[in-house]
View 1 (spheres, one colour):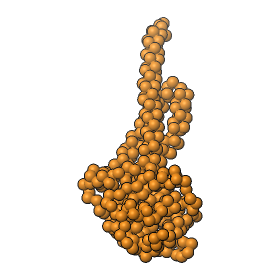
View 2 (cartoon, helix red, strand yellow):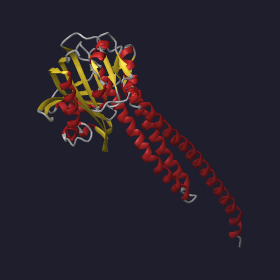
View 3 (tube, rainbow, N blue to C red):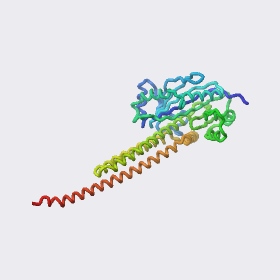
View 4 (tube, rainbow, N blue to C red):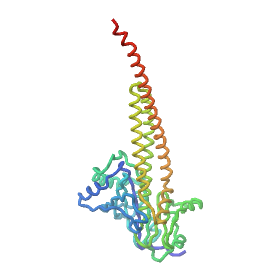
Length: 372
């Protein structure tokens, strides 16, 4: 067996994304952050030309103080950054640098970071970061969410090994399945193939492997925009889930309101139908506008490689499936709006007919009432 590869330079990057508001005013975020004597910048892809791939509305990038993570074997310092998106999401990233470490120890540290900050770890680091940053940025939040949704992701990043390595050779030398699956036991051949299905390389010596909750990136040329692309894909999943749950809660409420409107007396029915129709129209317009923002969160025009990774991540995270569910619920609400609009018009017509009949009756009766 060849000796273990040594990672000269790399990192373990843990993300946690929160949906904290309906929208976020990014200009106000920059002003609020500057008032704390801290620098904020608009996020951009570092190695990809803007004409090839760019953020629709660049998020605001914030640099925070480092935090200490208590791993099983030792305490490590993690760099902390945050990105604030206009569609209501904030993403925190903890970056644990790795240098001069053998591959088995890298895998062990990867698992240790996952246990320290992953779902079910019991850590308060994410809640503390959200409380700190969310409190400072509260004035910039439009309709804050009462209970934020969360998504997390874990990335193993390697910039260089102790020997030059082509992607095909790397896959022969190391087994990525334990790292990406988080499993200690041997997986079946079918499970291994499925886990390694999303593999990408642009040059012969780089590699990206994606899974639902983890990724491995080998990029010897330094910083990579793949991490930013995966962050946006996770943020889109988070916000699409938010709208799906919003509409799930809205549909039963809508049926109750329609039932109450039908029970109203004939004089109040047209107004109630019109009010409810306007409310549904406003909801459809808001959700449609914000889902279009999500669709334009990252615009790929010229970088085919990053565009493929972004599309694969969206499919892997089932963003389009959740988005299709949102579209179906919006279609139900649109149809209901149209039906309510018709009912309101019909109810007004019936009310006018009743008034006409009453007026005709009064016109007939009144002359007899005034007769001597």
